Length: 424
Image 1 (cartoon, helix red, strand yellow):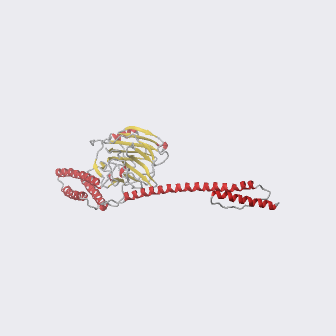
Image 2 (cartoon, one colour):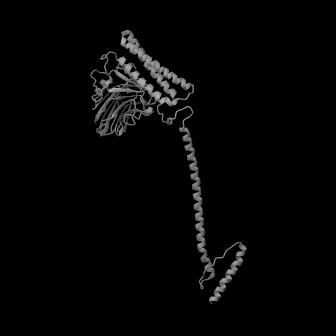
Image 3 (cartoon, helix red, strand yellow):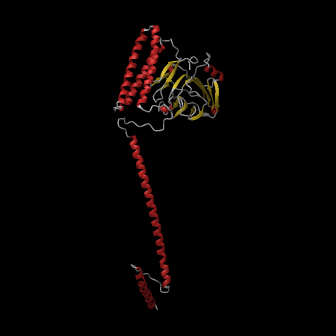
């Protein structure tokens, strides 16, 4: 019986070979089959693994196609990033005839009058020189009427210095118009001009004071004619720890948009401990420990205005006065956070680091005077007395406005000023 089974199996193979020849190239697979199993059933059973294998192959093929598509997308992304990188490198590379400094970031200028080039800087320096010359002419008229020999000699010396600076500026203009290179020396030249302007300002200020003791130390104003990152004034002393304060000042500006930063107080670890700023098209704000309150001041009309702000750490209550009148109030401004001591108080610039990190777009443009700080909340009647120049108006017990308390840098100037007598 066993022999008959093998015979039938071999016969089926022969028949299969004959039928396979009709379908071209084939191969034979020998599989052992139990003697009691039907050959057709065995053939159907043996086709199962082949179907599974076919399914697996199709899945692998699908995976390969997906990976190929992913690789193509990644190549496209790489090409796009490479193109952007090349464009960035091309923009950061110095252009012919320019220095190798970094370009100013596009879109960073939110104040409409920031200097953008060497020609603008020269125009600003020319404006500063014109201001100094006007002051010198005023001194000439004064010296003629008084006949002071010392004033005349000092005036002549200052006039010579101004003439020298005008020659430097004219030489730089000629260089720019001739298209010559040489902007690599711009930084050094600007530093020299700034230093000369500061020295010139100090000497003119001393001359304007006249004989020692003839001028009160608090009758002056600070002028910031240009929006730069190097023109500022610095208060020589720090502020103490304060759980309440009142700060008042006279201010005049027509800068737009935004007058900038009249003052900023930074402490170690917090650059925005106490800041007054009007930046871009935003309203004026006061920052305490980086917390913000919007103030209802309208001052950029080119006229003198008196401003006072009071604050207490309890519930963060604040009040804002303009020209002696309460204009707004609020609460929850840095509640229970005392103003920290051991900081740096700067006039005319916003500090991003302790005593520095100035940004020209946030610089103050205009004039300010009589900046006083108290470590308590003044009454509304006291603030009104300050705004109307009452003789009984108090001076700041933390910071009083005095020339001996303030140093100026970068071309900021001091002028004679008397509140309520100054024409707008």
